[in-house]
Image (tube, rainbow, N blue to C red; front, side, top):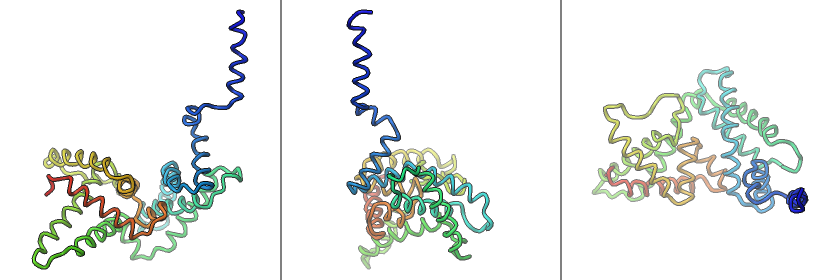
Amino acid sequence: MAAGDRRCPRKLRMSRARGPSGLELVLRPARVEASLWRRLRLEAQFECRTELFDRYAAFARGIAGSRYRRRASKRVDRSDFEQFAFEGLLEAIDRFDPLTGVPFTAYARRRIVGAIADGVGRMTEVDAQMTQRGRLERERARSLTASQLASLQPADPLAALSDLAIGLALGLMLEGTGLMAPASGADPRPTPYEGAAWREMQARLVREVDRLPDRERLIIRQHYDTGLSFTHIAQMLGLSRSRVSQIHRSAIDRLRARSGALK
């Protein structure tokens, strides 16, 4: 073996002794997650809470689906189970101590299962009849209505109602873009007869969502993609619910202004 060849193993050992490279750190999920926990706990970088939530949202949704299939009451909608699961996940993220050595999934599972049990137990018959999907739609409508009432001119009520209708239509279109999966399994998209123009406008709308300011884009995606309520988004971002509603309204107004074809 040549002298240069004999030195290669030593160089390799020295490289390993120095630890992983920056690229290796990025490519190792466990190290990336450890960095998120460190930045959240020690540096109070609360945007890490959103990243951790996104990492474990499917885990929480899976637990919700399992509990939903074994539910005792047929009145409670699956989306309600998912909202309770997300509530438990957010609580677990806020309370988890990574230094204990307990895997987060083991810690979070108990919180999520408990949150689902508590949430279903709290629901009255009236609450159960109004599904989470309906609550999200009402919440969305209240956000947009507040904006219209603030600027309503007595001489122009039809214009205000038209603006409100456009805002609600944008919400409906966002649900059909793939940003939000239908909770009931039904396909909310238009029929083939209406399809071409609708799909063209949806594609345009998705592009406009990507151009929104960071916080507006985050709230739109969490609300329409994950299906999080304003209350849970507020908890995740450390904002008030009213502030999340305002940001949602601002995002819809911005999308409406850019989507001239809807006017």
